[in-house]
Length: 134
Image 1: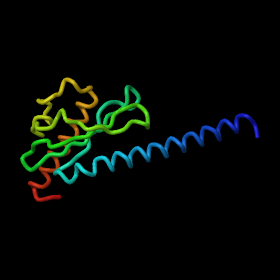
Image 2 (image 1 turned 180 degrees about the vertical axis):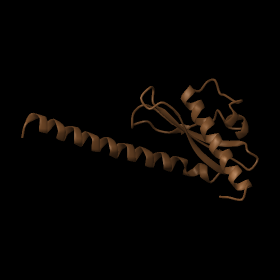
Image 3 (image 1 turned 135 degrees about the vertical axis):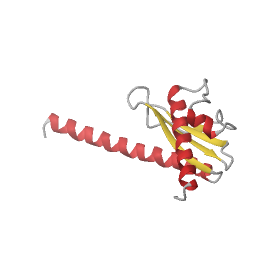
Image 4 (image 1 turned 45 degrees about the horizontal axis):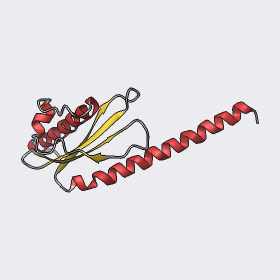
């Protein structure tokens, strides 16, 4: 086998490892947010760019009064990033976060975008419930 063939096999093996690690990271994040689902309406938002600083995933939970109860954030450029509690939005109205009126300056822009996206998904859910859909 030529050296070029060995390089392609090595790249293929590395790609399979990357896919496996990404799958494991997604499973761990899903396990982390399982507790949020029990607290109320929960949604996950995405912010940031894929290749410019990485993405952030924010899961927010709110109650029937539309107040954020809890949150988790997954951010980082590698597959080894782990989710962390996100308490900076706790107690805020989901409407204010979705409209962009409530911005936490201490958070990175990609986390702010992801929180806004998550809040918008929750509001869309409430609108579907209101109109009789699920």
